[in-house]
Image 1: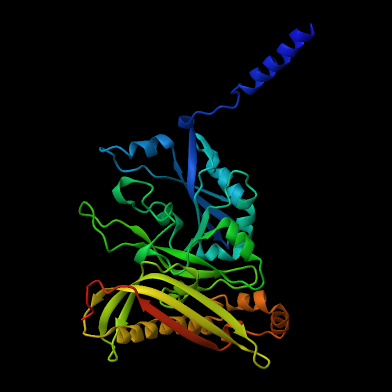
Image 2: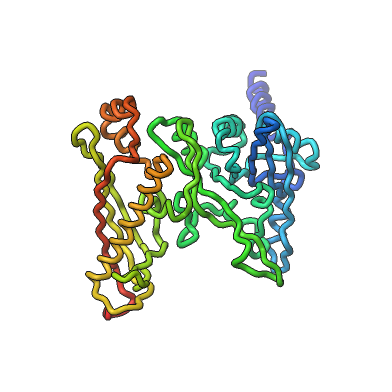
Length: 377
């Protein structure tokens, strides 16, 4: 009898372990891959729009005779983000899931509600912490229904966030995990890159498609006001918060004429706060490596380095000037003081110090890795 029980109990447990009572076929499940969130202040309502796909549709785009990928965009309104999503669920024919959500796009006028938006999405157990969040001034529907290259849903910035070269934004998209950590930090100013639509650069089949691209960014945070800085104003930010590898550096001679183009291959930086008197100042050191991509004048390596360092210094000065004009800490200088001189930070914070207005000493060094030829001239 004891031997019979010893066999029966494991057998019963094995039957329970191998059961598939909650199985769902992937053909019977649809997935939200990107969500756009807007806010109507006059109605006090969130507007949520979401793109819906099935894995079978994605598989069809992989063949040689693939057709245009069908984009389904649902729209709902509600007093909260999830109540707006619930209104979309009501007419969804297949079981919807947020497990493959990759991107949240927040319209600029909804950024003051970003804290509520993150709280709603972060409490959902199916939403991953590594999804990316970005902003836009375009209508949400236009962004979600933008055209894609080669009829694939994967060839768009809504799904491909690791970008290299000139298409890279001045400030990278923020993951949910990073933004939640930084949003309520009193010493930080987070930046969300802005997604816009390029309606003129491309043609396909006699029509002009609308493709997404990055331009500028918005400041966000529980203790800061949301403000927009364009790509020119954020040019200096790329040397600190967006890996500039593969980006261009246009050189100009002493008369302002284009002398050549360098491609950045590597960089590192250091920002220090130097206490002097009651305020102090920042010391910024930048080390850049690049190679020559174009050269339109005869110049030696020393002259090219001089022009290049002047351009980099000008870009950083431009961003520092934009910080003062917009009263926004675009380079996160306040956090430097907080991390290394917390007592000074508390005193300066209590006195109402504008950290972005402190003077900065900028030192730039550049090394040209190769010239593209055996000799420079």
